[in-house]
Length: 552
Image (tube, rainbow, N blue to C red; front, side):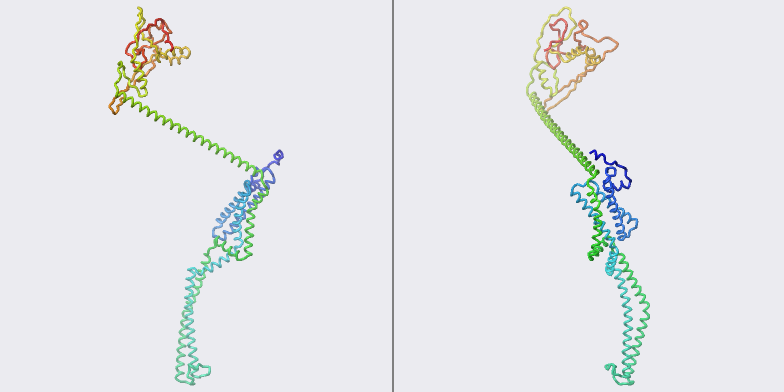
């Protein structure tokens, strides 16, 4: 480990070395060994050479195949060369994972080499391809419409000229035959045609007839020669024009023949398949470029795994593990959230069902109670103020009515002569306001002033307002029920700074520990009834100082 760390120090290479190392599939700054840097630089040189040859071959092939401007061909060649270089760099970059990865990269390199090799072979066979394309175009030119029309016009002119020549030849032949007959009639010989002469020498009627016929045929010959001479110049000009037109049409058709990339490759294929030497040259060219494309991969395999490759593999594995962990965490959180949402939904559904069932039971009980109350006679009881409560307080109303029916026994006590001010009787069961006041008196010395002022209402009397709301509910069987809701609103009134002191019950100064009761008539009764009482409380038999009621 120490020896590895003590490797020769890195130094910043030149820009060319950095570029070549990058093209060779590595990074100059991440390569810690000299031999690794050299191997990557050599691979980069091979990649550059492959791209340059591919661009050059493309430029030559396209210049012979298309009629584009030089700038367009140059741009296309540079683009294709850059593409070949990028593919070659991709083949040598990154770690190689097994034979399957090597086979895949090799297949890509072979395909790239075949393409570039075929383009190079087309450049090598450029002359043969042009000759073959010209021959094919010449064979196919006669079938074109322009060449066919020019050929037809030229043949017509030639036929006219031949007709004139044939007329002259025929007239000359007739004249020669008439001359032979005339001579043989005048002086017959064994060589003369015996069927056309009489065989009698000398001048005679047959001789005169032969001479006249000879003169007529000579006149016909002279006329035919004159006609041919008059039309000779015109026909000669037409023949020259027709010949030139035919040649121009043929040249146009040949020039417009397909000479594109596909046609040139087809012509090259025909040439190489017809000749073994041409086929061997083609295979050698393609094989050279295949080897050139595979050379970067071969160099990569020969140099083995470098530090850059190991770091790339480690980084990829770490990234894969982190992504897998994040994915698993996200999936688990989603599952937990889904399960929680399902539980909440089920709980809400159960609560809704229970609430609906409870409401149905309450409504059913209320309707039954209303029907029973409507059908039965109300029980005889003391007149009590009927306060209609909500359906939820039906049980409380029944309990209050039962407590109101029980009479409270009256007790007579001896009245002293000096009675204190009239006070209400303290009930056996203290009410909530009294308990609250007692607790406030006990807590007030132990808490701050503002807390005691907030919880103590003995020195700060309450102002009570009563609001009565009346609701009418009518049932279909003509049973009318009136419900009154009483709302008590308490308002805290702070004592005035200047003025009379608040009113107290008689005897507060004598016994400060006694309970303070605010002024105001508060209706109470001894029985545990919710209805208000109609009689005033009186003093009981208890005498002496007032005290808290005993706890039960």
